[in-house]
Length: 296
Image (cartoon, rainbow, N blue to C red):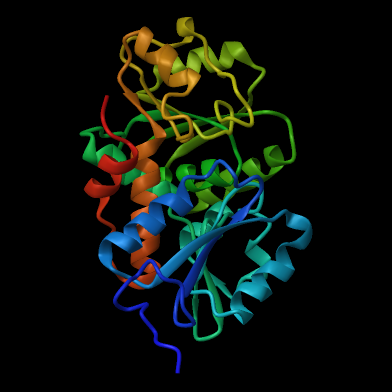
């Protein structure tokens, strides 16, 4: 009889190993597999986290397949965060309001969707001593990540939110989101074209914080949406992109003397929330940060 050593050595993949995944496209630059698998190894847990390149075209088949193959759950990244919503059995209030999902838990044959992007961002601000309740912020982007962030900020008491996005498929969805949030919160939310640089400069001059919630600055879309002259000295500059750790936006903001918040801490908070939902364990964040993102 073949001996099962998986419990003695959690690095061994066995017939008992449980799977968690990441779906989206492209996923080759994602740090999620390395981070989660290191977390499971450190905790001595028999789980594996695997990334799959998935587009909206085959998304329904993948959702059904994940459930059929016994996955515990999975993360969703661009461009699938909004497209996956109608394929799930149940979604959280934040996911419903934002129209986007980034975390799915599979329980009792049902796929349950949530969105931890916004909560992770707000949690990270608290950990860094940044308070935006009752204040104004500027958000660059209107996709799934931005929608979750905007929703959570409005629910948590941010007074004003200006959204800047290209005139693309997400632009009308952003207006729908604003209409829903106006009914459920007291936040004043406005939508502008990203090409309206005059409105963007005005918004930044009135804001406590700006967050880049687009993919600009990532390896797939290098660049920066802001110039140094747009950043007032008091403006806090944050970026949801975490690969590379220092995006062009963060570099420019640092050079300009602004307080910055890169995407690494947000990513780690989001990863930790995922592990709580999937397996009920606390990710060893300090260990993961030291191993993968040591301070310079």
